[in-house]
Image (spheres, rainbow, N blue to C red):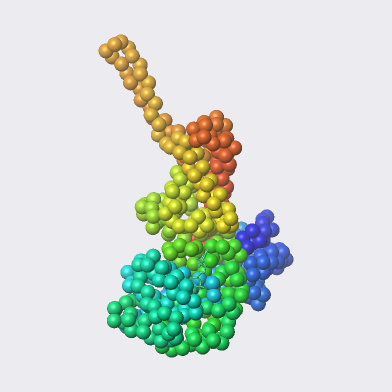
Length: 464
Ligand code: GDP
Ligand code: MG
């Protein structure tokens, strides 16, 4: 989606003002990009119409280039399309909050149960899971194992009891133990069928849940949006959880669900680890779709693992395009602590859209990069000079030289000797060093573009 949209902006370079004529072609690019991302046709039509209406009426804004204006309109419209604000989980005022999960088979329901418990535990809430998938004993075992992993109790009643009865017993158990949040897993089917819907309706009646969340797989594109609509009509849901966003490079599901079904995406799954569940931020998703990287998500995640000043500093640097090898190193070291590579790379501007198949390679190349950065001079270096006058008197000249290769990648870009030395000290080839140097400049360029867009129209995703 990103590259398709980038094509649209470049066509406006050199224009003075947005007109009906000069936006025609960029609008076609946007339309094509959205359709290729598997956004449904009616949604695309409305979107394109709304963007062109706004663009043409805009006139000249001093200091803002037309392509930046269009980026801003598209950004804001994307945010609106996805529901605008973050849609928070609701909690019951008295007694346990009950969350019922529904969805087709294999979309990630059982995994989400445990992820959600892990997420809520971090907010200080006690949780209990109920194993309601009675069709496969393996499904119950899976939930029990995941429950152990996140240290949350799992209520099971085997496969002979009806899901609605399991729900009732589980809820009693939760009340007895004063649990804050009860999350119920249910059985999926390969396709929608009446049996599943009836079962869910029965369970819902018994539980009277605060949240009924439909789990959908991001990779299914606009199909996900259609499912949310169907489930909402059939059983009444409060929102959706979009899983496997880590493997989805198109974004069609994220863009369509709210508009098609009227129900918000509340949470997204971005990987297989228990920590890989987070709120759905429409403005960040819009930024991501526009190819700006998920700067805020990244900084937020970084904050969890870095000291606070470090992270703030990093945000400033990302914003001011002064990102250097020290930051690069900090990031790569934080990566291991922050979760899957796919997700972290996707969040760094200029490094998005990495296919899972490339991840192993990327991980390997990170080790290589680290070795090369280690071999760069970090900052102050001491140089000693001893000048002896006679045996008793000597003057020691110490000077401090700021060699700063890590802070000034230019030094390496300009000097083949320096690159040669780094290559030698790190045991890598000169070509590898050159690539790394080129990479940091590419990242800076990306960040500069980002700044341009921000100055042009203060995009909320980045100035919040
Ligand atoms: P269920 O049939 O709906 O209960 O689905 P499961 O919870 O058993 O998940 C099916 C598969 O999808 C498992 O292998 C999960 O590890 C995987 N999965 C679930 N969520 C995600 C996600 O956000 N990203 C990725 N990459 N895999 C996921
Ligand atoms: Mg399951």
